[in-house]
Image (cartoon, rainbow, N blue to C red; front, side):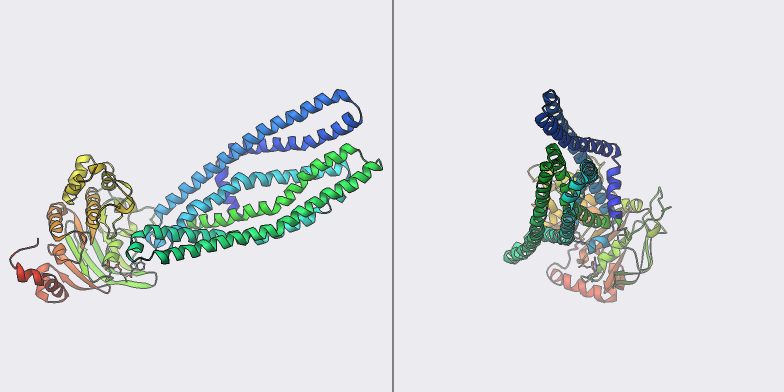
Length: 583
Ligand SMILES: Nc1ncnc2c1ncn2[C@@H]1O[C@H](COP(=O)(O)OP(=O)(O)OP(=O)(O)O)[C@@H](O)[C@H]1O
């Protein structure tokens, strides 16, 4: 019930349209209730009673009713559709806005395809309730009450005999709904699985091709698709099991009316017109009962969909901003990690990390894959919260910062580069929408991206596809670097962002970045010594713990793990070109 109340809350935002739609619905019902009575007058007074003067007015009244019904039906349908589309729009916007606010951990736990299915199928389920379920529910409730009153006031005996069968129709409809509700719930779940399977397959199409796993993927998709088909067939089967019974019982009502009504006409107890009118009203009474199952079904589907949608909307971000969050006008860029430990759910990843990065300094972070490098930098922009200790930016715990203020001063080049389906310029401008074309070019030059961009068919106006299709890994990385540079952040974080560019380009990027790094705190995660050797401090991580730290020279002098890595990476290099410096 709460779910329906919340759905209605969205519809109530357009209360005047909703009220107008209901008024036209009531007018339509009124006209429908009058029409059989006009038939009664036509049969009893005009045809049987011979009052021909009434023929034209009655016919005109029936015609008038038909015209008005058409108009009212049009307006009522239009208004309900209008309200439902507006609710759909609002719900989708709320959900999308909310998804933007949710933390990284929410996306760790939820599948993209599943979320897409909630954004589309489930919201559509709610709309169906508003555009079809709600008006039909209202309509049928009024018809049921209105017609019962009219029939009993016309003839109690005939009404009782004809309607004796109604409870059975209602019971069958109820049973139908009881079985069909869970079946539809399963369909919605399965549609989410299907959309996840399709989404993952399409997004990972290159991996599928590279591993020649098309057959496996097709089989995986077919399995989900088959389940979807089976669940739909099952729902269809439930329908076809109960629906003929409802049809039969409804027909039985009509037989009872004609049989008993005909006998009453023959005995002169009631007029023929009354039976004709009764027949007209009877269908208005049977319809709501027959549709009971369908209506309850639309409502239960809306409840199921509503639950899934509101579940997302009610999921609070695990990253909560304080009410009086810190939002300074000046930003220096000091970063301090104080005894920081961190777990992803139950899995401990970082242990007692201490880092002091005064504004303008560069920290290099090294370590084997899975050592916890990305986890460290994720804590600076507060993508996750620490489990113990504190991360301070400008002396203030990041948990006390206003998130937008904190993140507006942090430029990140992520390990997994994501580019939008937009022009090259649009992608770079993402870092700062107010930048000029000159600034875009400047940033691209620093990131060593300008030359290859100019070689593209439309230069900066070239559309690059979803996830940067059409660009090499290194080109994507360079556009991502330009995107972070144009933001002009006080804290620059580069997560293995030159791993896909060649050594020569990396060298050029680093030369250009040297100037840029002045005055901003920089964190460089890298596997290559050449990327971090100029850092003010290099931190070497192992299994989430800092095992070595110092400058390049200090670490070499220690002859520890860093030195080992250096030897591995420079072995050949020193043998053949011992004099040349990489940076
Ligand atoms: N979103 C996540 N949920 C759960 N565990 C995670 C998540 N991200 C990373 N981990 C785990 O945390 C540990 C550290 O991962 P992290 O990405 O920080 O390592 P890394 O040093 O950056 O590795 P790489 O060099 O491969 O990028 C790994 O064991 C990883 O499995």
